[in-house]
Length: 93
Image (spheres, rainbow, N blue to C red):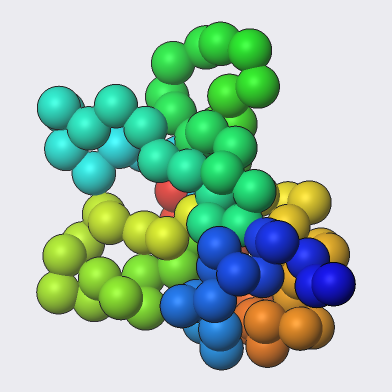
């Protein structure tokens, strides 16, 4: 049986990611989730909240500030199977 996180993140196969600090794409945006394990990314403090991770704008090139997020654990564990690549860190990292 395969890793359930791969099923969750299947649409990101082949994406390029960079390490970024999480910033909501607009003021009313509350949080995002890791595309693999669903851990929460947000700007506020809380239990199990991440503030940095791997972000891909591959789906959102026309919408600056919108990203697909992957936590460090999922990126490490799934990078090869998902054919993810790493780009240079962003200037807001």
